[in-house]
Image 1 (cartoon, rainbow, N blue to C red):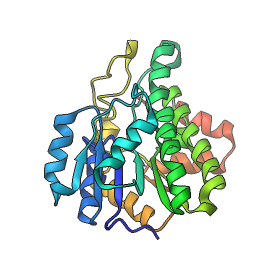
Image 2: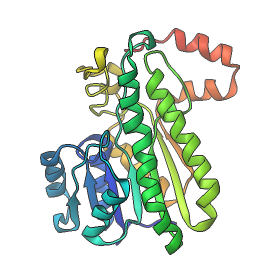
Image 3: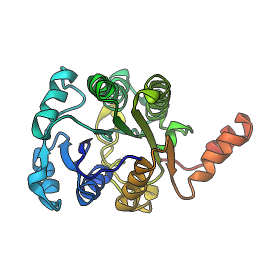
Length: 265
């Protein structure tokens, strides 16, 4: 069982949404935190909102272009000691059709959503193996198991996360390194506003499904409970769970016909 009290937890994408909620709940559980995102002022706001700000450090970083992952991991560990739990939460979504999406947009999405989590995990993994313990939390999505129109890059990135981290668990799970993949559905965050829109620019609008989605605090609590139980994977969704079940248990032809009927922004 992974308990957060007195653990050093590094959370990316911690300046808002699920990441902010994860940070506040981890602080309440007694963890020491390192918070990362691009927006230093927002990270400071989250730090001050935690129960013990002195046990929270901020490490601003642009995960689309952060250079040496080993050096960044060393910076994170310099605050409170070796990282015990890495939460790969930072990510970017998409709101464009495949024919309207340029390769630069796909590459940016993959850098943030796939290569950054892999690089940070690889930087920390040798220390975890040496100590015989560590935990990687990957905030994926229901799109890690299903596909929809206007999400070609996003679904590809989330599927890639599952492939990589499920394989890493096979290699390192018996050496004390735990992996938990959390797959939220619609959560009330800025994911749609910040998503890649036409021309690779921010979409700038919030989807109805996102606005009507789960409170990020509820989502974060479910993620931490899954981590504390050392669960391999957890789906955190409402009605969108239906799509997951259709994809899993019915013929792909049926799922494709179902998905084509959905109104997706």
